[in-house]
Amino acid sequence: MSTMQQTPPQAAEPGPGAGDLDAAVEAQMGKIVTELGAALGVLLTSLGTRSGLWAALAGAGPLTTADVAAKVSVDRSLVREWLRAQAAGGYLDYDAMDETFTLPDAVAAAICYGPGGPLVDAAATMLSSMGEGFDAFSEAFRTGQGFGWHQRTAGHWHGTDAFTRVALPAELIEAAISEMTGVAAALAAGGSVADVGCGYGTPTLAIARLYPAAQVLGVDYHDASVAHSRAEAARGSAGNARFEVAAATDLPVRGLRPDHLL
Image (cartoon, rainbow, N blue to C red; front, side, top):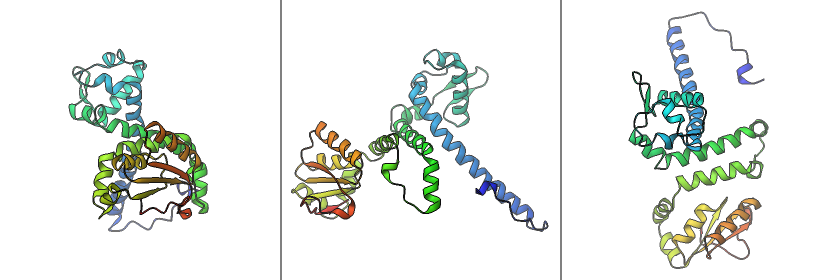
């Protein structure tokens, strides 16, 4: 029986604090509804990126529904509902008299020209994949079993990597390593480092490019991720990076005992 189906306990007779409890329950329901709206908003924002709606609005000034629909291939009725949802969410300014929608410069900078759009689109890919396998994940959670990376879909793997590329750029990785006492100097001098659970290897390859003298090893138990990482390394000519299929407990791998673990 799910939580939604369970019978609530018998309520006590209304007392002096009943009003306070009702208000607290209403506040919690408000939080739940807000979070639901935010989750659905991720998908709507991603739809705008994938369909060209954000690009159609960027720098265009006030536009009617018909104006926006003329710039994209989306049906006009769907454009209208999407615009209304974004205005309700505070991402578009709406002029009720002229029935026009305007994309503020700050929103355009974040979504169209900055990391916001790609970040949300990657999250939408991950969420869609998680929804697809949610029944199996729920069962694993309920029974105390693990749910391995290999049980996720390829969409989830790609979405996670896309999210990582936006959220963890090379300059942030470099800044983080510089805060680790002696690590940056050791890598610059030819030291070795292992990225344990490297996935698609985006941070691993960033480290290899930042420190070309270092020997950089990416390890992951997931063979498909390692194959992808090897292909990316070959494509980017990262000769000082290698990837091996191995669990964290298998280190050292093929005789390499790294100086540092990430």
